Image 1 (cartoon, rainbow, N blue to C red):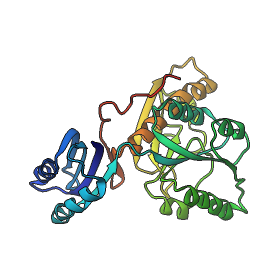
Image 2 (image 1 turned 90 degrees about the horizontal axis):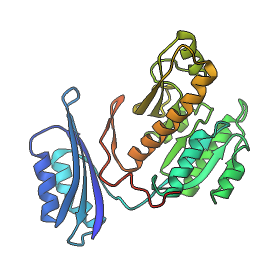
Image 3 (image 1 turned 30 degrees about the vertical axis):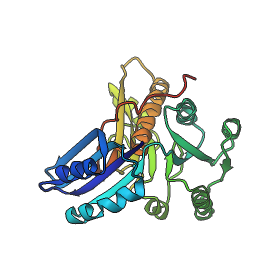
Length: 294
């Protein structure tokens, strides 16, 4: 018995849910979790279904059998095996809190991914990566070598078969070309509750404005800096008595949690691009369960 999932995006119309559930029932598949959203503003329909193939049919057979339905409704449809771990590259600079958090969640099985490389423009986390048996690549980036540096990064992506790049406080702006090549497959964490306080020093900006809430935003990377579709956000309360350094320290926990939740949503196929926004379905039962405790 196989556990699979189906993602669907199409124009909203009658009969979509009936067609999907009817097809799965006819193929001896039992639906275990389902979420759907009909966007009245755009006219788009989104659905994610987890199911067990109790009749023994495998993915290729299900894909082939579903083709007429997908064609009839003009669907973007994707079947995938929920047990298959997505290959991920983590990119980091000199702030290690998000990297450490992702490595811990990966190590205990709470984040079911295969980390195929850590890329950095500094050597700070070489030992950490090697101690986790993860290949480490230090690629220096300057104004003069940016194009070649990104070419090296993309060769690593191609060589490892990575499906997702996670920018875990990687403090370099990616080129338009790289953003377009990896559209919808690069997730960034911004240390601010976007769209407020953009740029390199958002905590300083927030401190100077006397805000009472600081936060973090995880989003897909686009050519427009800090403007990509938002996947996850979180906040923490602060007071007038706290310093700019306090803001930075408190923000680290929020950043790590927001990034981990965004990665979790992406790898489980719960995130759909919807123009400049996203549709993010809630996690399926058991998807946060860990294999180990430490």
